[in-house]
Amino acid sequence: MNIKDSLKSLKPYQVEAEFNGIRLDANETRNFLFPEGFVLNTFEFHRYPDHSAKALREALSQYVGIDANSILEGNGSSELIELMIKTYVEKDELIMSFEPTFSMYRVYSNIYGAKFLGFPLNNDYTLDVDAFIKAVQVNQPKLIFLCTPNNPTGGQLKKEEIIQIIRSTKALIVIDEAYMEFADATESMTQEVLDYQNVIVLRTFSKAFGLASIRLGYMIANETIVSTINRVKSPYHLNQVTQTIGIEALRNIKIVLNEVKDIIERRETLMKRLSSLPIVVYPSKGNFIFIQSPDKKLYQPLLNRGIRIRAYQDPVDSYRITIGTQEENDTLYQALKEIFR
Image (cartoon, rainbow, N blue to C red):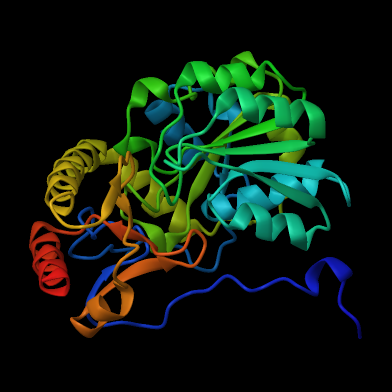
């Protein structure tokens, strides 16, 4: 049986094997919310989950200050990205973003037979907004992804730049704010998203909440978009364990915000320390740092020392380093000093 033409050149998403050392490659946050585990002693495991995730959406409504009817939950933001493309993009229609950025935009585009156009960022990994808008107007995409802060580069778009892009096109625009808790919150579009008929904001529990294992994300959009995508999602798509843990996490939002504050402080400290080494360190608003090391390879020497970071072939000699604990950051810095000695 032949597979679809759009999948013949598709490479699977690469996930690293288990690793017992210091893991600074996946933008994970330590388990600070439930260090003793999570007890489900009154849980009805034989029941189907709440299909509408009503209690979770109401808790999210309190967190983001948006009506629950404008929120849709998902198995991580990745499921929601797939649902958007499945709902709105026909075969051979165009999806645009800038690059480098989150690789799953291109992957899901290929899976559904859409065309994907990656607009190149500047040499310093900032976006030329005017040039991007011109490219949008020339190519007329059906859907645009804006990852801000951007993964893997860490750059954040200003709200006025995002609005400028929104007003330049009729395309559906998805603003991926997976790392917004670590960034300048005044540049978030969560409070403006309902002012537009063609805008979606994406968020996740995988980063700031340290809950990557439960696969929980959500989107904010006007009720028309939410109800339309609701028609496409699978029945009972979000299990009740994930819903319950998400609600409990939101009850402990002060703990989350304190952890985020500490991560930001550790990020700024590590950026200053890495800037003393012969590498290029780019400004970051995520829970990670993006660097380039054209004169020395870093992935294998660090792995040999029990530290794993994310290495990229495009752009070449570039790396993404997750902000770890203070001890992990200290170990990383000492290892890099040895490598460059």
